[in-house]
Image 1 (cartoon, helix red, strand yellow):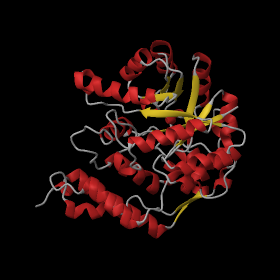
Image 2 (cartoon, rainbow, N blue to C red):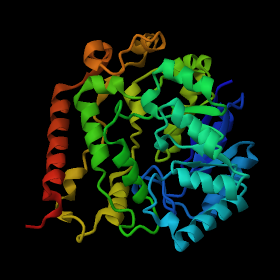
Image 3 (cartoon, rainbow, N blue to C red):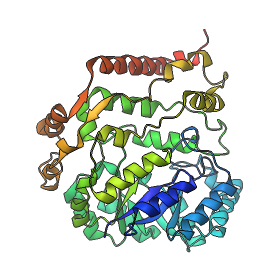
Image 4 (cartoon, rainbow, N blue to C red):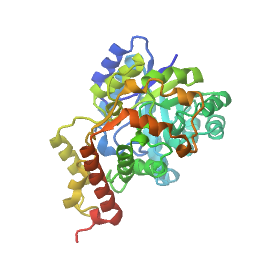
Length: 396
């Protein structure tokens, strides 16, 4: 049976909503992390709900009391080399001891050294490998399992539709295999490694910039997805209707994101995967756009971005419209049968121009208003130019 690991936003109401939806107990695990801690993780602090350790501890206990496991993310790809210092070792162990005290069931890592340390010093934890470890081959998978002792690998989403490779990995490794289901990332994204380092530092409690950071990678990623419709189709999402194909391939579970979502959106996504059916706009389903009041966004933005020594604060307004709803429409029902092409190994993964399947599909199913598309182009190119040329950082 396919199972699910669901992101938490630390709202206790989410636990009850999961109970109501999940009558067959397919949600085995809830995952999350503090908005900032010593290790850091896969989302910058400024996009996550801020909760203190007491609130987090109570939420973790509530999850476990509901009969589900809790997985704490320690999935930073870079710790600034502080893991090899006396202070760093002390802080890592302090965090792990706190998780042990709370009887957290599993931890997820991207850093191999951290995996070694946890498996040997804290063997009670189930060790899970983050998608940010970029595990996309048999060799890498076997390394994590046979050398470090990982119990589960979340494979890099760029191979989500490469069924021959998924089958090969499944046949070669003896651990749970998980896929990230509803993440909207560029296929074979060239920003991935840099982006992983960026979000790691932007969520570390003792980093010198205290969470400040301009997400240049995400800005570029979103611009390509919104301005080139075929990139949206090439992206790494998995439709709820297609989960059966992965189950037959030997995938054990799916990871449902995103931790920055409100409870309503998380429940909407989870329901679709449990039902294996979604009626509506797939773009809304994957983009994770919260309807947060502008005043709330403004106040939160002040805390993290009002840093005159780092950036020209008078030019910050250029960023405000980049992450609003772009108005893309993707009718999910028109994608019925879409995955068959990949499942039957017809895709030329290393030659998109020779394949053109995703481009042809995008012309049929992706709709965006021409005026909105031009506005997106102007907004994104203007900001990208401003960052790249350095205008956003100059006062003269």
